[in-house]
Structures are given as C-alpha cells and as structure tokens.
Amino acid sequence: MSQLNLILLGPPGAGKGTQADRLRDDFVLPHISTGDILREQVAQGTELGKEARRYMDAGELVPDDVIVGMITDRIDAGDARDGFLLDGFPRNEKQADALKEALDKLGRRLSAVLLIEVPDDDLVRRLAGRRVCVKNPTHIYHVDFDPPKHDDVCDQDGARLMQRDDDREETIRNRLHVYHSQTEPLIDYYDEAGLLRRFDGRRNPDEVHRHIRATIATLRLEDEF
Ligand code: AP5
Image (cartoon, rainbow, N blue to C red; front, top):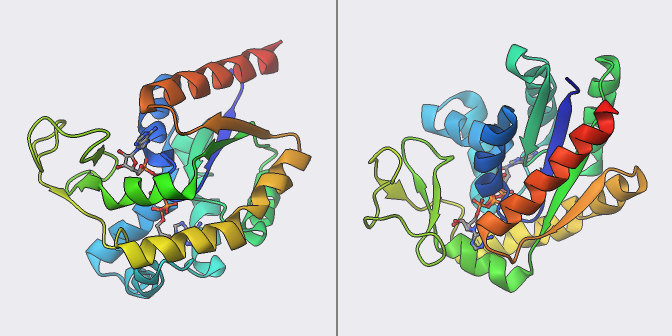
C-alpha cells in the first residue's frame, strides 16, 4: 500500500489537532504534534522543556535546531515508516527545507499538505474557549463549540480538563502574528510544489473531517493507479 506522508497546516486554533485525532483512526497514521511533544517535555521538566517553555509562553517559535532533529528522527521511527500526520511542523521555510532533505535521504516524499483556513477573529474565540484533557492532550474540547458532557471533565477518560498556558489573549495575538509572518509563506511554498489542498475550517468539525477524509482517500487511490 502507498505511503501517506501528510502535513496539517493552518493557524493556531484552526483545528489541526481536532482533525488529526479523527484522521489517525481513519488512516492508521501516527499523529506527530510538535506542540504536544514540547508540552510533554515541559511537563517532565527536562532541559529541552525548560528552554522551550520560554518561547511557548511568549507565543514565539522554539529555535529550529531544537525542533528539526526531533522531527527528522521521529519520521524514521518504526510506526512512521509507512506514513505520518505532521501537526505543527514545519512552521517556516527552514523547517520545510529540512523536512524535504530528510525525506529525500529516506527515498520518501510528501503526499499532501492539508491547509485548514479560518479567519483570525474566529481563531481568538476558539483558542480562548479551548479546554484539553490533563491526561491526554489529544482530547480537545471547546466550551461553546464542542463542550464535554460534564463541565471540565473529559468524555473519553474522565480526567480533568484544563486551559493551555498559551491560550491567554495576549499570547494568542502574538501566536497569530508569528503565524502570519513566519508560517503563512509555506502556503505558496507547498502550492508551488503542487502539494497544497485547502479546506474551509469555518465549517463544523465533522464536516471539515469529511472533506479532508475524502480528499485523502482520493489521493491514495490516485497513487495506487
Ligand atoms: P502547537 O501546539 O502546535 O499550537 P498551534 O499551532 O498554535 O495550534 P493549536 O494546537 O493551538 O491549534 P489547532 O489548530 O491544533 O486547534 P485545535 O484542534 O486544538 O504549538 C504551541 C507552541 O509550541 C508554539 O507557539 C511554539 O512555541 C511551539 N512549537 C510547536 N511547533 C513548533 C515548531 N515546528 N517550531 C517551533 N516552535 C514550535 O482547536 C482549537 C479549538 O477550536 C478547540 O477548542 C476546538 O474544540 C475548537 N475547534 C476545532 N475545530 C473547530 C471547528 N471546525 N469549529 C469550531 N470550533 C472548532
């Protein structure tokens, strides 16, 4: 079966994590989220976590040298050799070039870059109302748009829900600024490479999921014939 090497691209709060949680079950792909990996390091109090935290709390990007090695190793790990779903990486052209180089060396190539588009005003509301499970951060809710059945309790494992440290309004504004200045140029970068697929992220999560799933299924079929 052909490999599915996918990137989820989009601004903070576009729904990358929400969609990744659904798509990895559809296509049996490891969800590799740089944000989740870094937050895990912060929670464990490692040296990497201590360094990363300063940048994350300010809404800035963690330096490329920290991130690139981490991801290029990860995509060559056993469960990612048949494909992966990258979320939050790459975030600038330097990271995109490093990913291409790493894939070239492995004789692999990207299948598609899935761009989820949402206007800034909606993003601020989404991030301010986001709640995540303390036990498993891939369980994501929203106080208005996707509330848990019981206040502040995860539907999937009963653990407490919390607000992320970087979901404060002033940090959210800076994250959006960093996205527009450093990450948005990747839209043209991948469009020119013929890899970009666009999705309207203002639709509800199930509709966005249906569209992305159909696109990936088509890509896979095209690749097999
Ligand atoms: P990271 O964790 O990657 O954060 P992000 O890119 O800012 O994205 P988010 O996780 O905030 O949003 P999302 O698109 O996943 O949205 P979600 O599905 O949760 O990065 C955090 C930090 O780590 C960075 O600032 C940086 O410091 C560092 N970092 C990470 N990667 C790095 C890299 N490569 N290089 C350098 N530094 C790096 O949804 C958001 C909310 O909206 C939820 O409440 C959800 O329920 C709701 N929602 C989702 N979809 C919909 C919908 N369709 N309609 C209504 N509500 C919806």
